[in-house]
Image 1: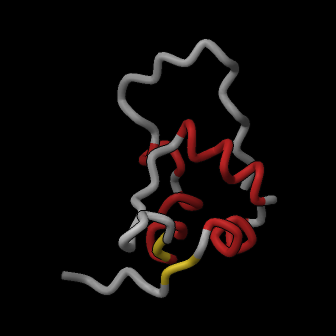
Image 2 (image 1 turned 120 degrees about the vertical axis):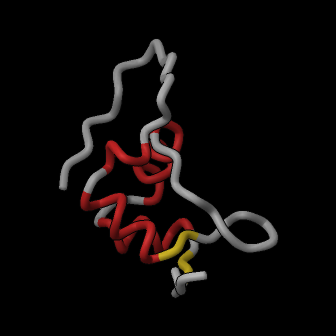
Length: 74
């Protein structure tokens, strides 16, 4: 098993990616990022790096959203 840590809270993960926590929370509704910890409230830095490099890898295959997708700026 590879080391994915350190692990960040939602607030710290948002800051790490350059987003406000509210914006990052909205992104999590459209993108599937792995969550860790007993409460599933931690994000691995390795996953966040991969997400920022190629966000489409974290999009679900069948998105049935009626709302306009959030525009991800890197």
